[in-house]
Length: 403
Ligand SMILES: *[C@@H]1O[C@H](CO)[C@@H](O)[C@H](O)[C@H]1NC(C)=O
Ligand SMILES: *[C@@H]1O[C@H](CO)[C@@H](O)[C@H](O)[C@H]1NC(C)=O
Image (cartoon, rainbow, N blue to C red):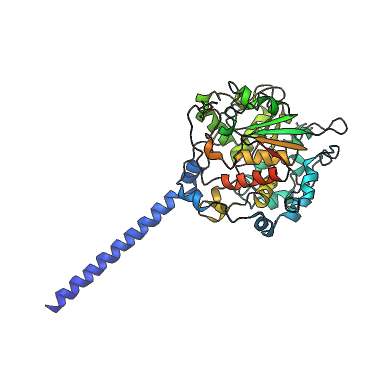
């Protein structure tokens, strides 16, 4: 009678073992598929569609990540950033007596964070073997890891007009200051009547679903720069069509700022400069003219330098999300990238429609008819961004519209 009992016990053990192996395997399989870059990217990286479990961003809140920590964290790229100091528009702001640079210099904290020598845009003269070597191991948007050399080379080498190297024309009257407004799409602008103030700036930056028609009193009409990734641009056309965002701002005086977040951005800007349909990849067959108009010349297209993206994230927006399992999805929001671009190129900057402390009072966007709460996704850290805008406003480096 002893031997069958032992057999039964062995069998039970074997069954148990088999089950745990199956369960274990299943657990890893689900873990893998739920966080596979493809799925997660689709869910999170699209600024207009991403829906992310609330616990992720909440766990990744920035509280405790002080600016001191950011600075102490250091900037591993300081030396390499300096090397590439070939921006021809370097002295552009020296003529303005009231430049934000003087405020930055006087501030002990921001004085160390800002580096006005960093190239903001990448163009043909930056494309050297050293640049390729340095950026080929860094992931987008900070580098070119996994991207084909031929695509990067043929794109950046095409940006060979000096207009590709700068945002503003070089000729300016003496003592003049470049005054910029950067208009985010936040619900705070609904009923704000800031349109005239916004349009009074020399240059107006807008981004993603920047509807102006029907909202002129609140957001103005002028657009000098439109900033986006191909992904956010195309998503905006779909998600905000119902609010009137049916085409990308077009016109003689409008220039385009591409954020290099994906190979798609390189292929699209190359096609736009060449004026040909997109020949390959996700956007194959798209006509750039459809987005940017038919008379858009090569100099209108600007590409942010991956090194600049890296610097922005390291120095200003090093979110704790980076240390979570969704770290690979994180990057500063399109609005943050545009505002920081303006802060590194304009003499004076006013920010409208950006997140403020009392963001809960307002809808997600200014064009919604019914209030929709702002939802935090894992690919951005809006609370960290809001802290940054508040501090920059407090020390007088920029003006943040609040109400
Ligand atoms: C820029 O590159 C294109 C294509 O290689 C070439 O045709 C054009 O002449 C170049 N322009 C300048 C200003 O060098
Ligand atoms: C926008 O403002 C108007 C009044 O100024 C208000 O009636 C409307 O509800 C607001 N829309 C949203 C989405 O908050």
